[in-house]
Length: 153
Image (tube, rainbow, N blue to C red; front, side, top):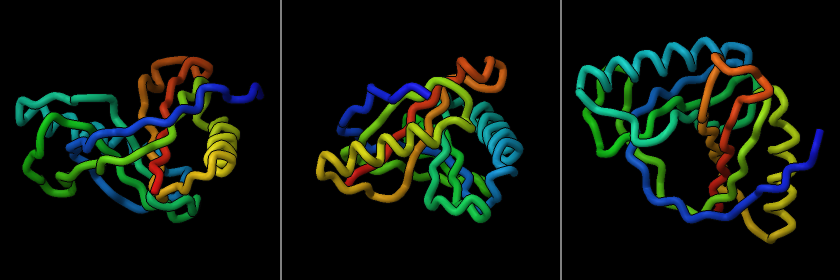
């Protein structure tokens, strides 16, 4: 695997979202994410609203057998909640981010390099990690494009 070289620091503004938060095993994620995105897309269509950026998944822990995950859509304003669809926001923060090209299963080395970069630069991660998906399963695995975002304290 080639080393990652595009790790950057950025100040992200607060971002309104709609999301569905659940707990799951890592192997169940593709199905749950697909269902969640479908449910939220239908809701946005019902409201006549659009995404303001690409879909994301937030990982509130890294226990692969009991992940606390939030599937979400960035939106332009706070929207009403409906059933399991929550209204909220991603808080403003300093973040470290990196674009990963390739299969989702190959992201571990990118995560490791980002964690090393954060440590070497004397920074402290804030916990929740976000993955923003610029394309999806309709693309070959080698062309999948995911932005990994790690907020800092």
